[in-house]
Amino acid sequence: MTDAPTPRRPLLVRLAETGRTSVAFTLDGAPASALEGDTVLTAVLTQHDRLRRNEFSGAPRAGFCLMGACQDCWIATAGGERLRACSTFIAPGMALLSGEGAP
Amino acid sequence: MTPPVIVGAGPAGVRAAQALAAHGLRPVLVDEAPRAGGQVYRRPPAHFRRSPAELYGSEAARAVALHAAADTLADRIDHRPDSLVWNAQGGALDLLQRGRIERLPYNGLIVATGATDRVLPVPGWTLPGVTTLGGAQVALKFQGCAIGERVVLMGSGPLLYLVAYQYAKAGARIVAVLDSARLADQVAALPLMLTRPAILVKGAWYVAWLRAHGVPVVRGARPLRILGGERVEGVAFEQGAHGDGQGMQTIECDAVGIGHALRSETQLPDLLGCRFAFDALQRAHLPLRDAAGRSSVPGLYLAGDGAGILGADAAEWAGERAALALLEDRGLPVDAARARELEQRLAGIRPFRRGLERAFPFPADWAARADDELVVCRCEHISAGQLRRTVRETGADDINRLKALSRVGMGRCQGRMCGVAATEILAQACGRPVGEVGRLRGQAPIKPVPLSALSSAPPVLPEPEAAA
Image 1: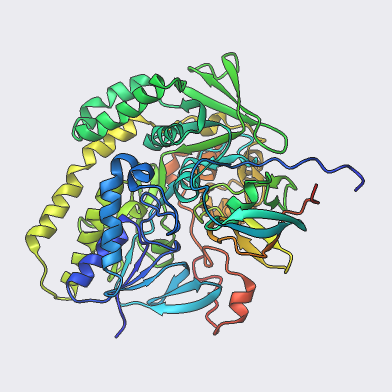
Image 2 (image 1 turned 45 degrees about the horizontal axis):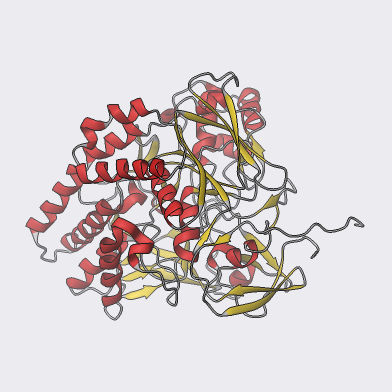
């Protein structure tokens, strides 16, 4: 792909609980920062607007039910695992892949 | 000695655990969440700072009481947080606990698995920025986040207004609340809803508050489409009974919360062979239970919204009542007057429940109006048109037949998100009442189990055909 990557836009907006310790992780290889107590879903979607692409449609997905029922918030790690983003807490050093190159 | 097991640590599960512990049993309480409370009283991580009043509003006292009950039980029960049940058979549950699987035998099982949003999809519902109404609430309660900068909430049901209020109160911008129910529906429901005046007043107060704070509330709104290419950019809807696109309006937004009331999470009773019957009020097949919560399977009890939607207060009563039933069935002495009182309270809430259904009626013409292009199954991208074609070509008139032929309900969500919509589309396509096209059967694993967990564990693989 030679297209210039578009800047990332978050989906989620933090309204409260912003005084927490920060947690460093990587998203698509680029350094990123979340807050302690964030789920992986919150950590990613406060800086980006997707978790992965759907394997059938190729369209981006960013979770849906946020309570472990829909199974639509899976995200890949650089280590080849898949995490259910809504119910997994972010941890220091996590390497997450949304499948899009970093900007 | 094999313990009794409770699945779900929400209002029903916690009260059930409390009642069993009070009678000297030591139940196992299995729950997917890290802390007890369920979805309605979901607790943020321990170091978060908002007060119960900020988190739970008018329900703060109830939430605090339930959390306190769960906390004081800590050393009298075996609480297993972060534990997902993915199979149930032969007197045991198969759990996934922090990446490992384990088989948990039970002697008496109380299923209190709660509910999720009932979703009637519209084109665009798979776009990033769309969550269920419950999901929007979880983002705020559990993470202190709004689902977007400019949020539209749509669908129907009490949660619609509650989430709108909670969001606006927390400083989020709600650009519109689109309720498919008409004001006339809500007026017609008043006599039944007056059976619980405090709740009726609270509901009316949310709407008044929203209007006073400049939040547009549109009644009789039919969502047509969520707009956007790679994420939400807006919503198209129409007001009134046109159905011809003439009254179409659009609103710009970057997030949408959607839901049409709630649907019970019934997969465990299904796997365990409980008898079900169609419930016309809830437009769903629900496991049969007696007034105490006994299912058709001996030793298996049902409590809370997972067995039929009655709300959080009723869930607390039903959880305690089911626990008393388990004790009675073991020949242990229980307080019969208390058991009777709980049953009376549960029966007393039913007129209000009917009122809610009248106030926020299911849009029965949803399927007839759904375009062929609508994606019904978000896991495997199966459209309403594909489902209708399958019905046309094969004559399928049962949801499990349609599942086998089209794969709808076979994806990762196992029908939890698409089951209602697929059943409605099937009924419409084959011209039968929705209660007569069967109910989607579950199959283990009901939630995905990582291969790494399966390979690291003793051989407890499910029999794939067991639920067929």
